Length: 443
Image (cartoon, rainbow, N blue to C red; front, side, top):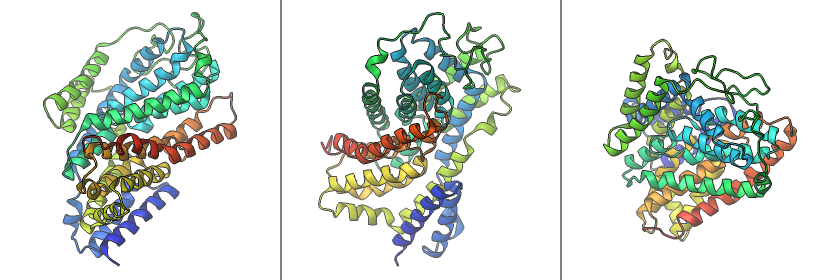
């Protein structure tokens, strides 16, 4: 058996084990990289570890550290509160505010599950209070997270753009970001009108009610307001606040400054983000002494391990093997469709973060054959591999299921999510491929 087959079988095994057992897939990937590298490719440990991307790991640490500080000092709660109050009395705008806030959180560096965990309870509390479809509200949160998830300073965006650069592909950060945002906006729009959006347009909230629908920052409900983290005892969701504090203004400026410095001046996002986080931490040392513990360390382990194994796959020749097989199906476009479905089906049961560093290199032989715009193809792969996170087997879908409102039974809500997930997995990659790859944009 050739090394390319050994590497592929090991990849399948680590995805299966990581799906069935509560083991970080990055840890499994390190084990697979060590065993395959040592015994199938005759590499030493230094050669195996050379595959890890220090740039990518630093970026993940930097952006999640900065987001942890924003969560500590109440900036995240401030964003949520401001957006929720912006709806006034218009119930129909509530789902869109949830979509927008979740997209904003992932766009500025929050891990997708973290953003869903923050906004999910609030959104589904609204659903129960104002008789909005729980499926609509829950899926709006997930699609919002994925819509913002490929910004140039986000976790998904950083992974995808780094993998493209490392594999010699032309990087088009905004193409991937806008493709994901537009696709998820379209899906949210379809959900809105299919699940009662027109009815919501005629509803208004009584000006005397809490604008947050009785759902507080901690996800609790009821009339007794709960203080919002980092804003003092007089600051609550849905009631009069003490206003924006200076450290929150500085944190918002830090996010803007990080994006501008990294994009406009072509500086490493990881260095810029961690510098901004350290400056904020120095200004309020006692408040943020635990922020380092809130860095998405499981995600760092996941990406570090999987990127190391992705390098082993490349050395084994597996991407070329699979890509050439897909290209040999008779048309490059058909091979691209197959890979979109591979990404969608696998990601519905496994980690999207783990899949992205693997699926992009596999696409290289198809891109080399010509006829496909690299950025559009990578965007199609990225979107196909993440829109399926609505599945209850993924973290995001599971969070929406766990926070269901009392207005619907768990079994009924589960069946709704399952039906929608099956529809997305079956149709989503096809439509994404038809929109981004089949027309041959810029090829």
